[in-house]
Length: 323
Ligand code: NDP
Image 1 (cartoon, rainbow, N blue to C red):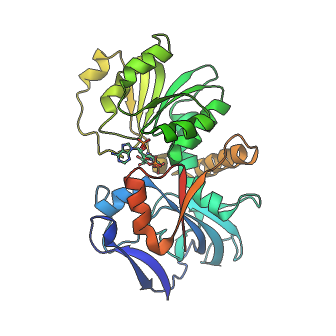
Image 2 (cartoon, rainbow, N blue to C red):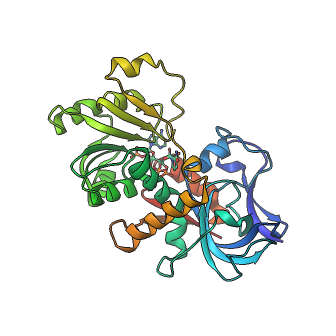
């Protein structure tokens, strides 16, 4: 037997139970990975609460790093002992060992430790596609980043600065503002400020060509109002709740705006895209442009405590769960 966190019902952090589960066997095309570290992501909360659907009982979690224990038939480019990491579906990462399609695994460069890998694969590849594909940020542009001291946020700030952009971050506390500044945000808007008003002041009235909004319900309108004409609203998360239906006429009224709701799953569905995103991420981490902040670790069996910290906005940077 091995161990995993399982949920038998949707609900609060208390629904996550540490249970004995059968030792996984690799099916055709699969590899079994022994996790050295598992990544904590906000999407895990959505699967726990039922905002995102999964059949129950379920082991949640979408990110891990560790060592290949066994491979199934047809797997030729991985072998037991390989150091690997992954991010994205299917769920099942909150476990000491799991089986996963081998083509979802990426081999880790020797210089990247397991904790760093588990902290960065999902949030870092998200930052990669947001900055390089959803909107290709150019040197000299000023961009708006919500939850700038969070996991994705700190990576976005550093990477965007590395690209030559000026980042305006939004955070809830003065401590988080300091952290975002230390990781590349040129300006930080704190608390319940008038976000469009601050963006107007900071950009001399020009507003921004793109907003990266992971907060959802609470910030959707202020984000639209922070965009320059023809700007792109990237609504990529729901930490404060889902945005809900919107009147598309608003996009016209506010300046012929564009709106997208992207997901890492789409941007890494092809193996070539997955490898390109991971390669780009490994490069900025290894050349020092982006440093991965593992600011919290929890034993995997205490995932409930990790979820409480994440949902109550007490975490900064990335969080790793240790099996
Ligand atoms: P974070 O570390 O950013 O944690 C969430 C942060 O959101 C909090 O720290 C908090 O920062 C802010 N926040 C604002 N309002 C609330 C609220 N009501 N409740 C809780 N938090 C709130 O998490 P992640 O880095 O894991 O993920 C960031 C977001 O990006 C999530 O929404 C996630 O779903 C999304 N995401 C989307 C992906 C995609 O492909 N679409 C992929 C990866 C992540 P503060 O206190 O400063 O406001």
